[in-house]
Image (cartoon, rainbow, N blue to C red; front, side, top):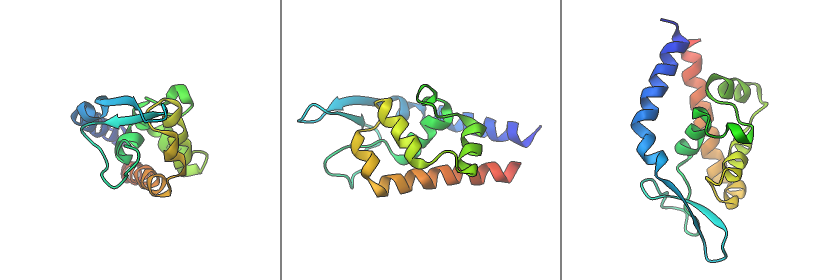
Length: 131
């Protein structure tokens, strides 16, 4: 079995296990009518004004191909573009905002962007183990 097939298999199993939490994301609005992403199963507690998807969930949406319509590749293409620098955490967050999965405030939240960066790095590190 190729290592890339093994990695894809592991990620598929993980996505199936995590799908209920990711699929539970809902779009709501705040007091000013702006859309906010709410995942009732996975709210971050240290953000007071807006509820975000956990960084893993947002990055994994990209990995699963849920942000392809916004120009973000999935799977190994996502990892490859991230490793070469042609895709950044900000690109993923912009795509998630455009897909109505995150509020626009996430674009200016350096802690959240750093957490997405860490998730993308972890995808790269897992990939490097098998290639």
